[in-house]
Length: 159
Image (tube, rainbow, N blue to C red; front, side, top):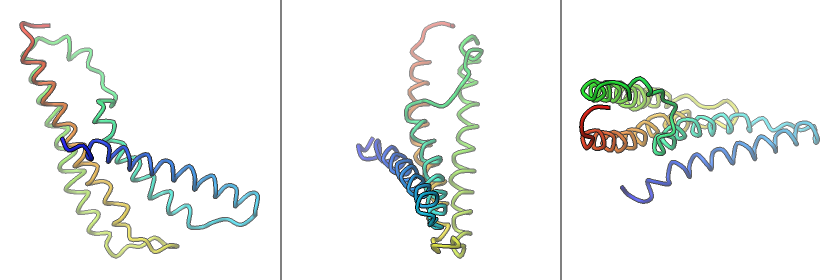
């Protein structure tokens, strides 16, 4: 895998979270100490939060850190376990390709004329995080799925 891709999602998520913390702290100080609120901070932090959450999904998938309860799957006989892996993968690919990428791109394109009220930033700049995260997550899930299948087919016998 390309080396820059491995840290790109982490870099984006880290930047977004750092900026959210910095901007929110500045806004609180400005509002309550200087009595001069910064109205644009809310728009920027909401946009950064969207990027942080969706790109964070791919970052978690890269580390296989999503919550999963596989106790019963691991207790299944090997043929059922393999079938369940493919059913799980089909469900995840449906969410990633149809909902995140396809519908996310459609939603992003529909937002071309929609602007934030204060700064006038196009919502496309915010919404594009959804299909980008879907693409990154699908790459990481595919890598994880292939590794899982390789491990499963190397095992001999049942559980």
